[in-house]
Length: 173
Length: 173
DNA sequence: CGATATTTGATATGGTCCATAACAATTATC
DNA sequence: GATAATTGTTATGGACCATATCAAATATCG
Image (tube, rainbow over all chains, first blue to last red; front, side, top):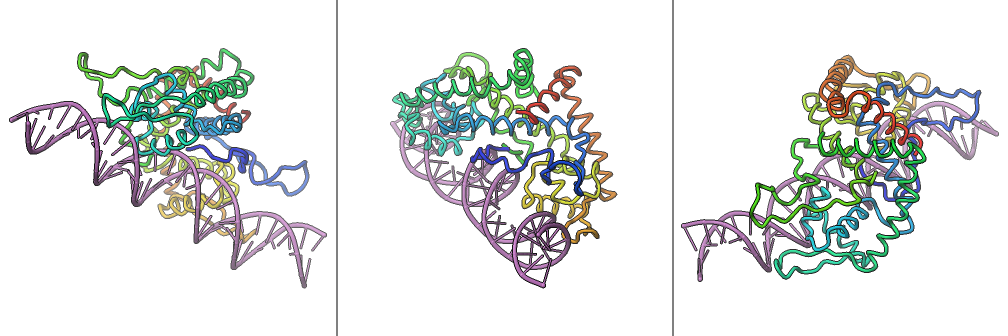
């Protein structure tokens, strides 16, 4: 799946569908049974991921950062001086698709491509001062408005357990 | 993100990138630090979801069913006699996008559209005999080859806890 | 050294999924 | 009975993903 750009309109709520479900009375077609679907790993994973990305975009509305862009800034900050191929492949982004993404970040003066002196084919990536500042603000927003919501919902211990299990799936499944 | 259709070529491994990382010696650019990324809910969720969908497609290769198609068959089986709007919106699929999906399933004789006698605008959805048979085989494949893998990886208790937390996120985040 | 192969960033292109607008047929509403 | 709403559908555009290909630069190896 993918991130919807417009973050504001959820348009179609997964469960509870088709009718506004007012009060009582009225013809009211009864709700559909999800059945085994609610136990399917892929189904619930996807739904959760969509909700999380949606919330992320809302939290980042003031900074106009998508999850993918945020991950690039984070990785470049943590690993300054790496080239496009290294950053992209670490994030699972194919090099051709990374070009437009960098064009965007560079045009907003958040990061910069610098020709490497060792290997004049490659572009070294670094965050600009503005990029560092924006990333700092983004981190705070994510921590206070996004990740904090998980604690409210699951509790600290469960949140950590969840992240751990997801990481294990991502790495070993 | 989305499901890659070709299921076989992972092409870009997320972590451990850019170099085959043979033994030792050689210039060997050291691995990048993921840093805070590995603690980001959205990042790890997305990565896990991709891996799970990838594995799902491999398990279903013999039946040629995508996660989305599987969910449609499951829902139609559980709720026979519903129309396209009801099934689609329950799954979070927009009606226009559901048309081609049904065209596909119907052309493979897995499900059928039946003009409703009550409301001649709507199409009632049902599984064909072949659809029921295929779905039965799909369920077994998913249970034995897909979901079972979660137990091997996390254990029964953790698996149930994970599904529960993801469902909670999907519904309440 | 020099020919060949490889790597890097980039472009072009096609596929899939997602979202909106609009339409004809049918039904609901008043 | 005129108007509004609903259903399935088509058309269309955007975002994301994947492959092939290219020029420039570098690496490899005879």
